[in-house]
Image 1: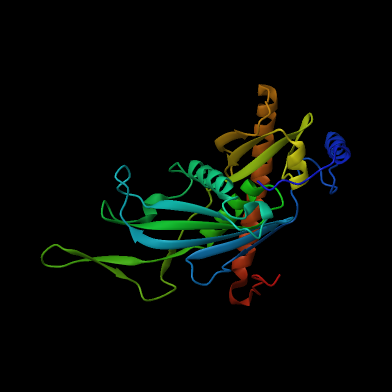
Image 2: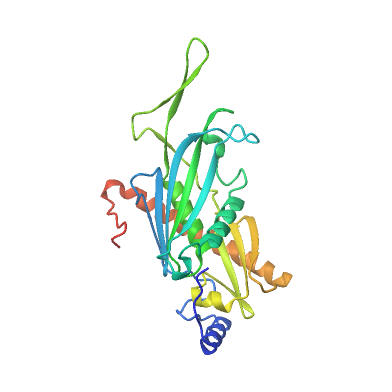
Length: 291
C-alpha cells in the first residue's frame, strides 16, 4: 500500500490529536472525509461508478457476459473480481509494485461476497447448469490517499446498483434444443438488488483509540487495523485483521461495535445519494473525468 513519509514529530502530533478526538484534518475519530460518488461514467460497460474520498480515487466497471454456472451452484450466476493498481496512483505501483495490493483487495472482495445473502445470485441464472450471467467487476485504483478497502467496496456497490443486464428468453425447438434470445430493447433489462451488499469499514488503531477512514499519514501511525464488512442493517458478514501489531479482545469488540454504527450511517448516505442521482434521469449533469 502507498505509504506516506512522516517524521517522528509528525507522528506524535497525529497520535496526540487522535487521543483528543481531533485529527489532523479536523475530523473526529468516527468521521469520514467528503465522499463523491458518480455512476454510469463508462459507456461500454453494463454498469460503472467512480468514487473519490480525499485523495483516493477509484473507478469500477461491471461487464455482464454469459457463462456456465459453477458445479457447486448450478442455479446461480457469479461474480469475478479484478483489481488493477495504476502506476499513476503512486510511484510504488510501477512495474509489478501494485500486484500484491491488488491481489489482497481482490481476495477481500471474494470473502465479502462469498455468501448467498449479499447479492441475489439466483437472479443471474438463465438455465440451470447450462447458462448464467457472469459479472466481471474490474476495479482501477487511480489515486491512493488512504482507506482503499472502504473506497473500493463503496465504488463496487455503486457500480452494481448501476448495472443493467439484458433480459433473455429461452426458446426450445422441436428437437428439444434450447436457444437463447437477447432483447433488442436497451430499456428491457433487469436490475440487481444491492440493499444487502455490505460495505467494508476499516478501523485503524492509533495509540489507544481507533479511527475510521484513515488518511495515508494516519495509516503510518497505525500498527494494526480491523476490516469489517457491514450490511445496511448493521450486520457483520466478515472480519479481518491486518497489520503487524496486536489487538486485545476488548479493542476488537469496540472496533466491531463502531464498525456497525458507522456502517449503517454510511449505507444510508450512499442509498440517499444513489436514489437522488437516479431521480434526476436525463437531467443529470455528468462530471465524469472532468471534475
